[in-house]
Amino acid sequence: IKPGLARLFLIRGYSGVTMFEIFCVALAIYYEARGEPYEGQVAVASVIYNRMESPLWPNEACDVVVEPRQFEFYPPSYPINDKVAWRKAMYAALEAQTRPNTPALYFSQPGYRNRTPILVIGNHNFYID
Image (cartoon, rainbow, N blue to C red; front, side, top):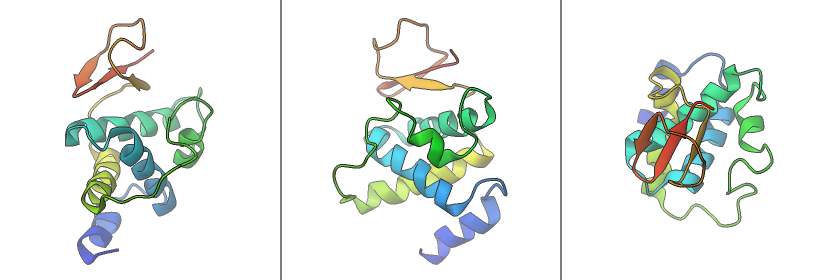
């Protein structure tokens, strides 16, 4: 970890989320939303953290991410080749801990769910139910 990123873990990290969980959230962002705007990546991370607080989901980020049929990437089928996108995913995972940008529990591409989104960022719609 580069010094700047390590400082973010120490300064901005939420004490209830481990570095391993941040890594799991960043993986989800990288594989699900790396082509999306940064705010959309923060929103995807926010969904994961919101699920951790919900009684409907596991209370650890990695367990949320590996829930069946929730995140397309799992298990990862190809390596992380875009280091810039990976770094951006890590920052988004960290930022969403202290500055979540949506109360949503779900996200999808437009037209996938028959619900009205509470937020649209890039190519993702975000939903509460």
